[in-house]
Length: 350
Image 1 (cartoon, rainbow, N blue to C red):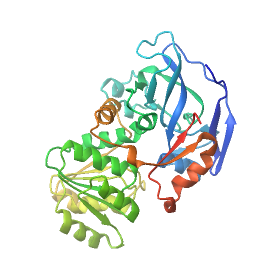
Image 2 (image 1 turned 120 degrees about the vertical axis):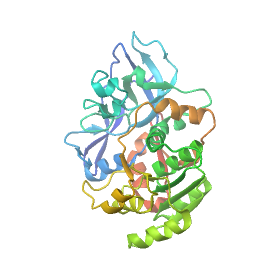
Image 3 (image 1 turned 135 degrees about the vertical axis):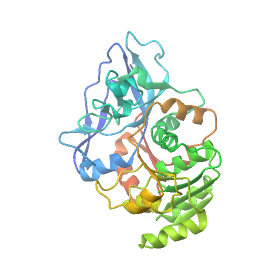
Image 4 (image 1 turned 90 degrees about the horizontal axis):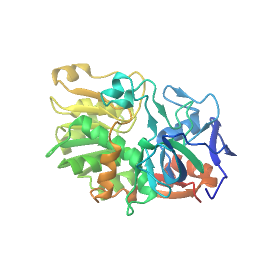
C-alpha cells in the first residue's frame, strides 16, 4: 500500500466538520481495503453537516461522512475471491445482518441491524482509506469511471423507486423534485418505457437541465395554492399512472395524491415531515396506492448495467469537483442554490 495517510472528513456536530487523521483499517477475511476515489455529496450528508441530524438519525459522536462512493482495492482479505488489488469498485454502503427474515426474503434494506455508511453511529467513507465487505463491492468495467461508480448509489435509489412503482411501457409519470434523485428517477422511468414524463421544481435552472436530460414536460411551482398547482399540472400531463415524490416537500406528496389516476401509485422517495395531513377521501375513492421507499435492495447490479451498457449517461449530472481537503467548500457549494450544483463529487485521491 503506497499511502498510509488516512485523512478523513469527520463531523463532530452541526457546522463542525474537521479534517482529521484516523487509523488505517485492517480488512477482515471477507473484506477489502479501498483507496477511496470519488465520493458524492447526498442530501442526507448536507442535513447532518448543517443540522447534526437527518430524520430520526442524530449525530451524537464524531462521524466520518460520505456514502456515495467508489475507489481502488489495495488490500484483499484471505477469503475474497472475486476481487484483487487494483480493481476499481463501487461501494454499496448498507451492510445488513444477512440472517434475519427480511434479509432472507431479499429485503435487506429493511434489516433492523443494517449498518449504513455515514448514518450514526456508523462512519462513512469520505476518507483516504476505507474497508468494506467484499460482497458489497462491485467491480467497475474499464470504461466506467470512478465518478460514475459513485453515482451508482443515488441511481440505485431511482431504480428501486421505479421498480416499486412498476413503471413500464407507456406509463405516464409525474416526478416531483428535480434534484439528483428526481433527475435519475426520470431517466430510469424513461428507460423503463415511460412515454410521458413531467418533472416539477421551484428551481428554473434544474428544470431546464431536466428538459435537456429528457423530460417531456417541466413545471415550475410558483403558486402556494395546492389546488391551483394540481389543476395546472393535470391540464398539461393528464392523470399520471405514477407519481414519484423525490422532493421531500409535503405539498408535492399531496399533489401526487391529487393528480394520480384512479388505481395509480404515489411513491414517497424523498423524506418530509413525519406527519402530513392527506386528502384521504380522494385516496380512498380512487384507490391510489401509497408506497414508501427506504434506500434500495438488489439494485446496484442493475444500476451498473444501465451505466456500463450506455443506456443511461449520468456524467452530465456531475456539476462540481473538489479535493478531499476542500470538503468544507464542497458542502458549501452543494448546499447553495446559487451555485447551480446538481451533484458535487469529492476526490479523495487528490
